[in-house]
Image (cartoon, rainbow, N blue to C red):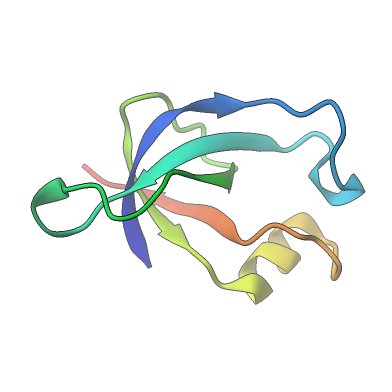
Length: 84
């Protein structure tokens, strides 16, 4: 799991069928003292996170496949929770 900051949302006109209807967020992973840790990434969000929210990410592929109901999804990162 990795803390991250929501930078905004993303849209794609062409995407894998498993991502149709899913909300994609642009997320900045955070390290110690909320310093950016690597480049921004795209993640799936089912919690309604908004720009500026701090969230917890998971890269657990099994969780993402179960959430999307597709064993062949290319998605890797999923918002697991909101951080107060």
